Length: 482
Image (tube, rainbow, N blue to C red; front, side, top):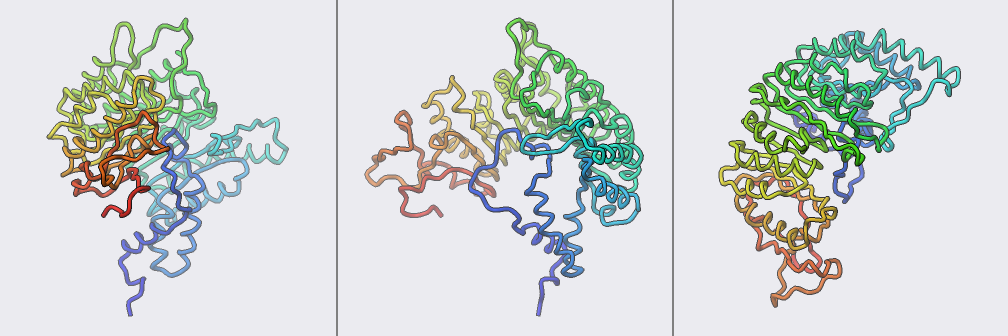
């Protein structure tokens, strides 16, 4: 009789990966900037590891299936209360043996500050030595010494095949020493930097790295109301100049992601000059291999008296000939139209698009017959904030997306995800009324007269769809759609 352990290792791993570890929820995924975007190991993720770890004791087959999942990534968190744990972790990494040497290709340096308590719900709390007890102060000093003497040797011995690093950078980190070592790791291909402190941006040696395939930069801070003044832009400009050098020295750079937590720059009325980022950024032939570009609340150039975003992005798209994926969310209103107009006039053919703002240029681009679109994600939660968008225009946009846009890409589209607020603008009513007259709906504002019926859309003709997220109105339907 066949048993589950007779299955191939790859099949067992798929089964283990499907084990439920969180409660199912009907809530849509969050669209605001949150800790999960920058890789914070929240409770749901750690719960998963706790629930699958006991499977290692079932039998050797399950142990072999679970190890690649449990040890694919190692997290280092050096809060003073974890002194014993970090000591044991560094000793294990330095021993030269263990499953992580075989499976761990990713390292997440979550915290190298013994006085920093990570709290995902609030961003974290910074404690001061003078408020510690003598025991806490001694543990903090021991942790600082441990980081200074054991961190880099432990990484060097424990990760012979290190491919990806995520680093939450703070002022107290050994930035020069750790950067100097990581820059020599020949297998490193992906780097994620979360700048938890703005004071490290200006002098961070980003240009020490080379030959990367993926780079992600997030500008984060404990204080959500951090002022985006000229000093921050000046420091960020210097960092982007180093990023420009990194792109030049990485001929296989395929993905670039830049985001910041701050929603917009706060300027006083007297502050009329808007500093610009380096105009040479990404305007070299080295960027021609870039396939994925993601900008989240980050504008590469801003409108000024002497420059317009249109000129910059027109020049930019000429060098992004390999671009196939674009994620553009919560950027400036100047950025979205300028970038999409430039893409329309270029030879760029995107297969994946994620946006939160529709422009005429984007609509025109989506109607290109040669566009090999496979994934379309609309995060239109900001509709209610747009004073220049009327109800009729929003309704027309919903009809346009469900009809002509889907019709143009029905043979290639595999993922369709509409995260829209308010939802009644994009409801798909499953069944038309028999008499052709729609009944009144108390949940629908009186000014929304247009209704979208499923049978009038091109959704059912998208035969290649693998993932679908839209809102169906089944309240008046007698049968479910097949």
